[in-house]
Length: 265
Ligand code: ARG
Image (cartoon, rainbow, N blue to C red; front, top):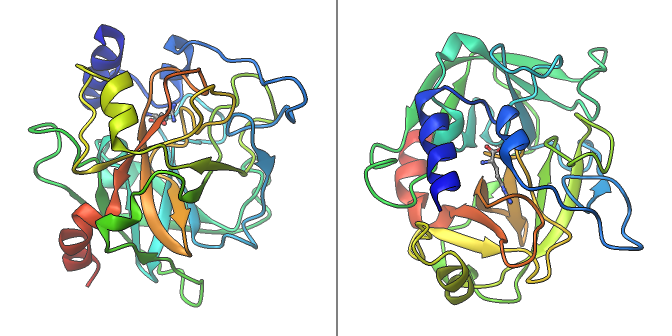
């Protein structure tokens, strides 16, 4: 608990970046027979098949490509990301669409960020790790994801998929777009394993595997958890990555859909 809260506090204070906190997290080896690529335990993915997945790079990132967080295109000029990814000045971000390998700057489109809205309750109570950024140069014509609006979607066993360019814990190529299926484990499971660590059932989704092995990780934050073709969750937190008994926690989009939609317009 102490480590997680420390990491979250340092992130909020801007002392740590999403990339640097990976060093503080326990490592997890892939299960035998699992492909050694990440997210953690995932597969190479292609932005051509997930065009709404947007890399949110930042000039403060220690990663040479600027890799920082994920986000999701929800309108031509709006992305949804995590509140904890949104603490830097707008001018320091670049949104990147259609770039599978972030070092390959010959591919994809870029936009600067013109304004940032962060859920005003973030940090004051549990959950609320959501933000909306406005693109200076809209990604016109790129398919968007609709928000999930029903909290009933957060049901154990639902087959959601998470996408990102984040940490692989040394198990795969860096800064390369990946995806992994993470079933919903349900609020009771995370309320139990994260007892006292701030899991918020009304506003968060618990997804992954009780035995670990597959998960989102540092640098995937803000990115999409997709279910039924809708934006179901936003990568938020976990303890380590892919460790048994410590699944991924996602902001529950349906809980915040009305306030997000008001920003998206
Ligand atoms: N907070 C991390 C970030 O800023 C994401 C952590 C996700 N962790 C997990 N075990 N699913 O990138």
